[in-house]
Length: 172
Image 1 (cartoon, rainbow, N blue to C red):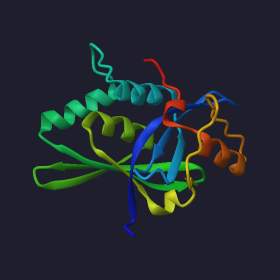
Image 2: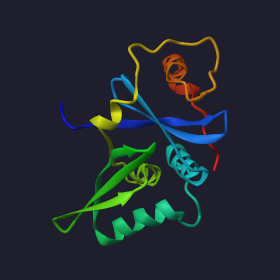
Image 3: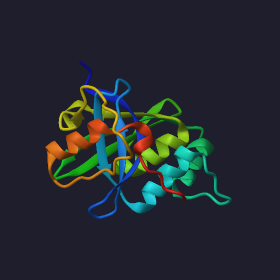
């Protein structure tokens, strides 16, 4: 098994206990779901990219993409490489004139940029091992509010019942 798994953004949800935004990553087979708590500005940037919203003036993540494009570089991938003390760490890998450049980043910023550049998102296996394993998605009767009460079993139960359309979206 490789040391990284490619994941996609499943959506943005809100933690009802404190209204903190969460970006939810999911592997293509739907076996793993990885929630990452993020800031409101980054949530808005991710939601804007998911919705295809473009502003008249560049926002920070759009500016970063502009730098990449103007320099003739390519964003190869982003990787969520570690989690320490409940803090996730990411790397952005850029190719510029045959050289690979790796830049430290917060996962939320890296994800917002990856969505704008249509780049792949990878998560290290040792980070995923603590992700919620979903054996089969069960459909719930109604919309399920994502509740993360520091109870892993409750979190697992909630995520197993969710459908992609259950994730809320931010309007930028």
